[in-house]
Length: 126
Image (cartoon, rainbow, N blue to C red; front, side, top):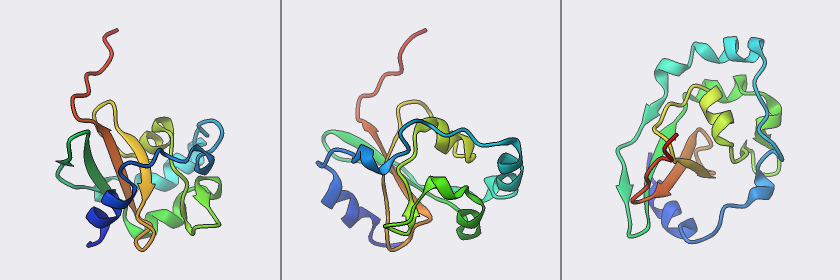
């Protein structure tokens, strides 16, 4: 896929638009989880890349997986997924270390989700 680096640069400094998220994380039902299980092993994770503030990566979902994701995870005005809360993207089967924020969807390729986290992110101690 091409274009995600260019898009990253265009939106890098913009704050995430929280109107593009569900107001609260929307948990998946057991049936929804079962429908998504077949796609989990086909999720592709990019290498990380960074600038002075953030490290980035993109996650490529199998295209057919988009059809299995619940409709209220989609943004009908853009034809893409909404920006997902961590609880939501983890429920879809995306596995990453702590601190990653889903901040953009690559509109020409809506199965590509863009993530960022502060470059020196340290997870909270419990």
